[in-house]
Amino acid sequence: MSAEEFNELPPHLQAELALKQGHYLHHRIKGWCKIDLYWLHDFYVELWFLYDLKSIGLVRALTSYKQLDPYTETIRLKLKQQKRNR
Image 1 (tube, helix red, strand yellow):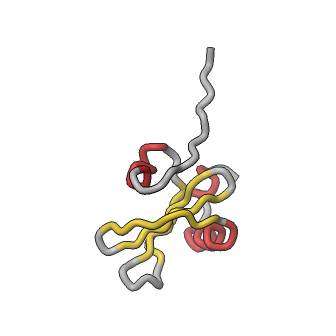
Image 2 (tube, helix red, strand yellow; image 1 turned 180 degrees about the vertical axis):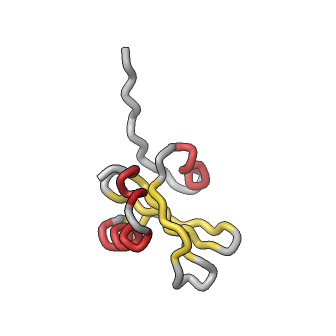
């Protein structure tokens, strides 16, 4: 499954996959959300928990390295090497 395919799934299935099959890596706080970062298959997934920490407000697979910027100062992440056409 690719990150793009994951993002097309209904949110409840995305959350279930991330929580059951993903590997928790780190969290960060942004406003009224606690955002957990997971490694699932070969991509990163964020789960945005609302302030009550019981409700998930957003689930998304990260599809660009720029989306990982909030994490790079606090943890080391493994990034896939991009293939170059010669």
